[in-house]
Amino acid sequence: MGPSCARVAALCASACVLASFAAAAQHSAVPASPANAIGALQTRDARIVQAALEAEDSLVYTGRQVVIQFRDAREQPFTQDVAWDGPRGLSRIEFRPPSPMSGAVLIVNGQDQWQYDPQTGVWLHQSGLPRTLISRRDGVRMLLENYEVELAGEREVAARDCYVYDILPRLAGNPSRRICVDRETYLPLRTENVDGLGQFVSITYFERIEFHRALDSQLFAGPARVAQVREDPVRRAGPMSIPEVNARARFRVHPPDYVPPGYDFAGAFLIEHATGQAVHLQWFDGLSLISLFKQPQGSRVPETGWAEYTANSVSWVSDGFYYTLIGDIVPSELARVRDSVR
Amino acid sequence: MKCRGLRGAVFDSIEGLADAATQASVEQHLAACERCRALYAAHVRVRQLTRSAAPTVRGPSVAQAVVRDLEARPVVRTRPWPVWAGAGLALAAAVFAFVVLTRPGTETVERSPLPGRVAAMGEPLSAELCAREHARVAARYAFADRAAWALTLAETNQRVLPVGE
Image 1: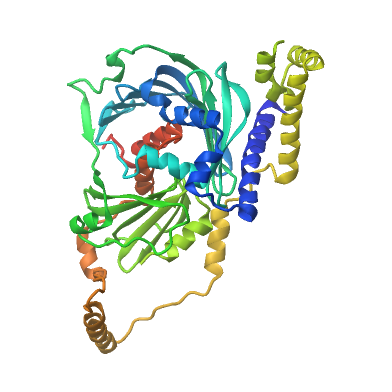
Image 2 (image 1 turned 135 degrees about the vertical axis):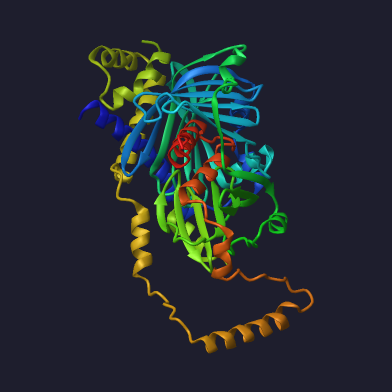
């Protein structure tokens, strides 16, 4: 067995650990009450998990990450250099070869996001990073209600000692996650994402990382004044409640009659684009996000059926509207949500 | 090799990826350190359990299996109705809606606009652009794999919104 095949086997074994827990959850899980869920997590582990959630806010670092995406039963590794300034809300990612994105740069500077295309020399600008209706505190509560967080051991990532935690669903069909948390800074240095069927979605890890007191602001500067800039044609307003979005949209939306257990409504966005309007509804369970888009069908027949983009996706047309449902949960649960949409 | 060094080499050793010198160091350390022997044994056990619990080869897309299942189900087909039947039904529906939906305490439901009116409301975002919107929000949540989401967003931006237009 060559090294690459052995690595795949090792990664598959990791996914199987998470999948086996997901399968066990189907037969034996009884959702814990909020108080029991939080209390069940050992105090030391709770402190580490809480610290891991907040680590990025206070850290400044540079490093090189490897992102492996699993699409169409293939591994696709990409490498990117990252600079992060948590206290100032700044980040920069530069994509490296052999990625097809090689040379592209993605910068977040406060509420502005800039993406540089090296082939054309044009910058794409997006303003307004999305907020959520669910606070971080509520998100942690939901995470512990809907998932078991277990210490799975220790390992080295980027030559740093890490705790390994598995985030496993209490209810079958939800995704899993394994995070390797740096023992010194509590920053997650490796993340393994597994969908509701136990199949890898992505693996990201630092090859190297250096922590700093501060970074030069020029590192996060957007385009020069003379550069070509193109504005993102999509505008978003939100998050808002369903009555609020119904008051502003040109059509009405209704939440689906069925939403998987554990998911709370996380807000609605009103999306305006060059050729129309869409409403984006979201539900969140502490780890996993479900999105439902509703928009007028238009004059052309849009793409319908199942697809795999960043997550499982299904699109359909009904009563003159085009719907798209996206989530990391199993397709059968997405189908149930889809069938309950009025 | 010390305990710290073993933790970095244990996975490679179990998977047979360690070179001869490293493997020899691992074995020498395990012979002398009871605590690391227990750690090593635990990792070996996990590997055995996962290999016997589930296949290690990624199977075909489950989405395709779901589509096949859905396509095998009976489909209720609609046929064009005569104009008079449609008008009669529309009138009956309107009366029903007026009577039922305006009762005190009943939520008012606005029906979807007819296709003729919808066409004037523009063209929809593609499913891929919807996936981009999903990724934008997902990346903001705790324990999100921001690096993977950033890559996805950048790819989608470049592919679906070409900046060279």
